[in-house]
Image 1 (tube, rainbow, N blue to C red):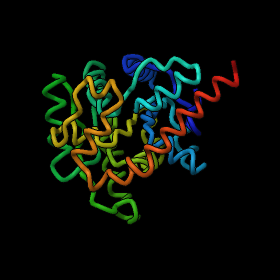
Image 2: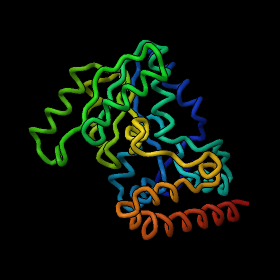
Image 3: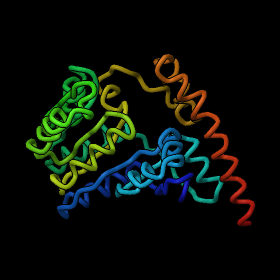
Length: 250
């Protein structure tokens, strides 16, 4: 299903985990993009970002407006699949499959705290590494090589990358040739959430599509401009366009 410039798969979270488990068993790696409104907006306005997203094996709907747009256009996207939830689901699958996990992103100490939380939830989970890269490392070739080199040297089966879009997807693209059997998840704030640094919205608010209000209340200075000025108008236009497309086809 095409939402804006992004092709979103109609998958449940359980189906994503099952796909990854089968790929591990076959020795195949891949990447997952959890496409929220912000990612869809950026990709729709910048063809290079749309191409970056399209390079991933799985692109799922992270954000109820993306789910609603698909449904309005006539595609039954079954549920919202968030990076924050997949951090736990895929780590549990990694533990069962004997695969190690590398956590990359978050403030100093946060990925280590998240790793301990994931191990507590999934007994037997092996942590290949946890790293909070220095601010601006991606603009410094030497620092970038050092960070990517640490990940490659750890040989993880699952890499959780929480650097925000598109930085995390660009780093994943660069890492994949050196770790062809690993799976990569761009999880945004999923690592600090797993560490308990940020809470998720109540489930009822998540289902109603209001988790962005919860995040906005937690980080108003950082998120107000993005959510209110950029994402909200785009989400409305996305829904209107999906509805118009359905009417045209019918």
